[in-house]
Length: 231
Image 1 (cartoon, rainbow, N blue to C red):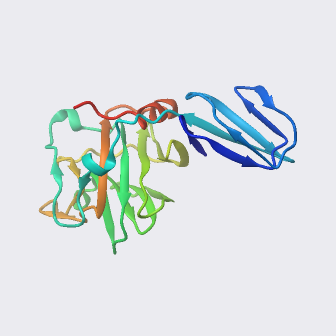
Image 2 (image 1 turned 45 degrees about the horizontal axis):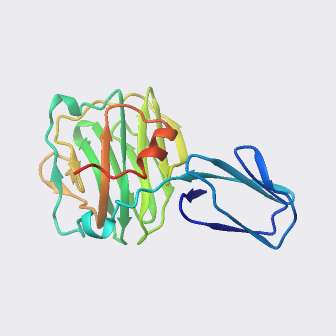
């Protein structure tokens, strides 16, 4: 699990607590409060099992309440166009903070798709699941929590697709390279299957969305999830 710098976490019934392989608490106790710097790898043992957590520095400048985009299924979405720089058929990463609300059907986060032409991809929420779908037929999902802010990421590279939640890899699959869609990249919606009009507008809020034409590493995701986009 993630632990954010600047906060404390209480561990109950530990026998050993260590940070970066250096033991700093080794006396069995009912509980111990841990405060460690960002970038650390910490662990604790509540006999006989070891558990681990990563320490991520969250920038105080991230203020979802005042700067997030609120879609709320109202038909609002962002059209990023179809410039050649948005050809993600070799590799891509989409990452950002979402506050998904309950909705029947899909809530699209970011898509570049044309299903009737078997082109592109769709990154979306369905029910309480984070989903990544490729028009070549590959699709997979992982559970998320509704009505709660969480950092999500979809990564594709060299036939491998991955889903992350809060900087932790949740699911990985192998998939064939997909055909880039000629339609626009949309944030908060997807194209209708015939490529005309939009559907499945996101219900909730999206913040700090980043789209890369490279496959970001887990360490890069953990760094940027705590950094606001400038200006």
